[in-house]
Image (tube, rainbow, N blue to C red):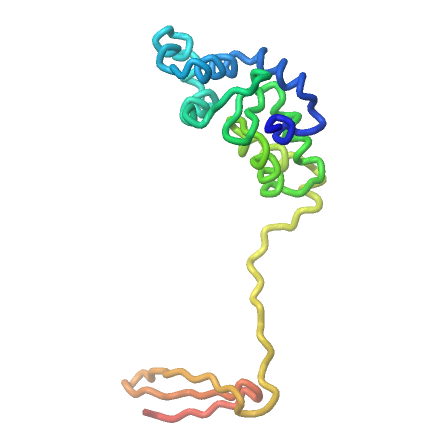
Amino acid sequence: MVIDRARPLPIPLDEVVEATKQGECLQIAVAATRSGDWHQLQRLGTFRMIEAKARHRALFNVRNELSVSDEGCLLRGLRLVIPSSLTGRAVSLAHGAHQGIVKSKTCLRNKVLFPGLDQLVEDTVKGCLVCQASGTPDSPARVIMEDGPSARWQRVSADFGSLSYGSYMLVAIDDYSHYPEVELV
């Protein structure tokens, strides 16, 4: 049930199983998860070669959260670990609606996991002409103005100002008419 809910529906289950069997890193992770001895693989020297790569190290870092399905697929909690040969296809499916970086990442993170997910989604969306054409340019945040007063002297803004010869003035301005009142203090 977890596998059926976690995998992207357009990717058939037998294709995920076959790609998992073909992926050297996932097969090592599946064997280590089943045996519960990640260090045995490290002593054999097999894991040392893979540990050097950042994407494989990510699986080692979450080894206590991994499990193996009956089909031989790797799971982290309720999320399916996608083999590297299918990552591009999974990202394309999540990005299909051209909904941007954040929504594409969220769509994938809810169901699947693979090392480098964030970077692959960002590269895909940034390279998509449709997303770039429909996206909003970086602009400063809009200032939301509140409604002004409807009559004189309903709301007053006040502040102190200093004069060059050491005196101070109290300035009060009517927000409706912008009429200033100034008093030396």
